[in-house]
Structure formats: C-alpha cells, structure tokens
Length: 528
Image (cartoon, rainbow, N blue to C red; front, top):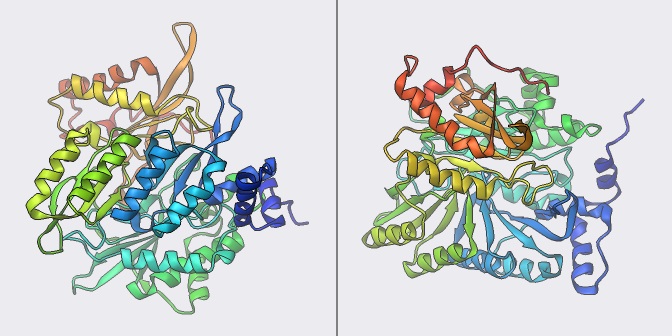
C-alpha cells in the first residue's frame, strides 16, 4: 500500500506552488488576505514569516531572499538592492553562506513595488527558496580571477536558465536541491556539502574536467558528499545536473521531509546505482575517475585583499563583514562607492563576505580604503575573516538563541583581546541544531540552546570542534565534545582554547589541527 504524502506534499500536489504569487498580489492590491495554508508556499519566492516573541509566526513581516545567478550584482542591480534594503527592509540585511542576500521586515503590501524593482534590473526572487533548485553555488570571481581553472559562471548560467525555462518541471521536488559548480583554484563553493557538485581540475595533459560529487549536506542529517568516481566534461555539466534533478524529483522521499534530501536517496541506493541511473537518463557513460583531484582546505577558501583580474588593467578586492550582517546605510554606501569608481559590480562569497570586481588598477587602493573605512576590511583578522552566524531567534522560528548581534559583539571582543592571534580559524555560531551557519564543518562550532548555568536556565551553546572541508577523503564533521557554555562565557571559552594551545599544542603546529585532536577521546555520539 502506498504511503500517505506529507501535509506539505499534499498542499503542493493541490496547486502549483509558484501560483502563490497570485495570492500575494491579491493581498497587496485588493486586500484579500493570504490563506494560512499558503504561507508556507511563500518560500518559492524566498519569503519566510518573522517570529513573534512568543514563538508564533508574525504574518505582517517576512524575511525575503533574492536569487543571485553566479553570485554577482552589477551596478544597476546593486543600486536596486540597496534601495530595497533602505526603503522596505528597515535597513536589516544579511549576507548568507549560500551567497544570497536576505532582507528583513518585508511586508506583502510592498511586494508589487519590490518585484517591479527587481524585474527592472533583471533580478527575481522566484525560486530563491522552496522545494526545487536553489541558486547555484560558485566562485564569486568566476570569469574574473587570474588563476581560475575555468570560468564556471558559463555553466552556472546555462543550468540556471534550463531550470528557469522549464520551471513547471522543476518547482516541486521532495525538498530543496542544492548544486555547486566551481572552477575556482581554492574550491570556495564548498562542493563537499552540496547535493550535487562539479569541481573543476586540470589533468596532466591540461584538459579541464569536473569531479562529480553527490549527497553532501548539513543540518541535522549531515554528511560529506560521496565521490561518484566519475569525471564530467564541461559540455556534459548541464546534462548531469538536470539528470540528477529529475532523479531526485521522481525518486526522493515525499512521505517524510526529514528523509527527503538527495543524500537520503543516495544512502538508500548506494553510489553505484545512483551513477547508473544518471547514465541511463543522459544516455551515455561518464568517464571513470577513480582519483580525487587535490582540494584546498576550508580555511584557504577566500579571495580577500587586492587581486589582479584576468581583465587587463583591472583588479578585484575581497572584503569581510562582521558575521554577515550589513546595515542598509552601509549597503547604500557600498553601492555609492562602487558607482563612484565605476566598478563591474559586487559578488557574495560562501563565508558571508563579499568581493568588488571590475575595479580599475589606478583607483583600486582608493576604493579598498573607502570600503574599509565603512568597517569592512580587505585584510581582516582571522576572526573576522571566518566567523559566521545564522539568523537566530530574532527572526527564525527554529532559533533558540539570539545570534547575529551577539556574534558581532563576540567578534569585536575577540579582536580586542587577541590582537596578535594570526592563525586561520573558522568559528560558527548557530541559534539551533539545524546549524545554518555551518558549525558542523567549522573548527569551532557553537549550537544554541537553553542550558543550566548557576542554577538558572540561560541561553547557551553546545561546543563542536574539529570540522573541515578538504575533499571527500579529508573532510570531517565537527565533534560534540560534551561541553556547553553560557552565551556570556563564549568569548572566554574561545580564549581558553587559544591560551591552552599556546601552553601545550599537543604536538600540533597549527591551531586548526590542535582543535581537531583536542578531546578526541571525549566525543559525544549524535543521538539524531
């Protein structure tokens, strides 16, 4: 007997999820309220309800994501995005780990104006979220970086366009479908945690191929992607990306959303069956690829500083935010500075940071100085370079602890207390166990919850140590070590780790490696 579809699946089966935009316009223009059961479908346009102090959904305000193809915004798009942030989002803007921009305090009554603004510069929020292909992860300087392996933006646009043109076939998957296509020398698109990813490398003969990986992902059912032991030629990328989408759409679990990601299907089938199904759909065999190409370690995946572009006479500059949050005033200032120097545009990284590209060499230092003066350095401290935080309980229904403003304060304190600390370290602060800020792969991860401290229940964090991304063979999920700290003690705890490392590094030459072996005998098994 067939299993019953989940409630969400029944709703999607009753109506194309993309048609929820009709209801948005009816509420905005005619005053006809959106039905409660349709609020969940707003995700297909990047919208999620804000949360009231009592934990209920606030149906007046929404968080809204915009879809950025190949992570970039040109000057006209950047100006529109800044306008939306200042005029409609109360100046609250977040850069995400998936190279998106999130606005807060968006109201349905403003949606027609916002959508018109986006459309005027070729942007959309359609399929920015929901159960379908999410915006594709790629290098923020694809087509720009002097040392890239291949310009992956070409393939990103091809695949995205295919899904867009055929959206009725690809708007109703069992869950989200996350792709990465990278031609970056430092693999900054994090292919190890994508549902399906293509990672470029050069053979000894100089041929460019893509290594295919399947079934990565974080949240609670976290796992590192499995190599398919197949290489994909550039002209085959779209075929394989679409085939994997169709396989997932038609075979993924629609009864239990907790078991409805590509990785669950992979685990049920095994990699051999999954690859065989890909080859069946595309109608040809992929090249065998038993050897994994050399992959850069997680902490080296950045594009900070002033860098020469492959375009003669131009450079690009990578800047750091503070935990991904940018005020509307700052975002507008960035847009104004970019316009002043007539740059190519601004792109987002997978670490909640950003790059300004297409900068003329003769003005690049002036631009870098002006952006740095806003509080976004191009030579950041190790803490600022890779401290990530999620939305937290301020706006997210899953959040247990407040994260964004808290993380910003943590960063400032760390920089003040450890000005001489220069080693690479990735720190993540998450407001719940879903771990949207990626504590599962961080050197130091903090997962929010309520804990007992000094006889009271307070906001605190469970500690995870030793995560890393470095290809299928060397990547590792961080470990729970049986330690919980109150929010007020988080900086002190990090400081203690640093000081202990200085006193006894356990034979390790890097702080990162020290964290990976610290408490190795005190690992707490996941009960999930």
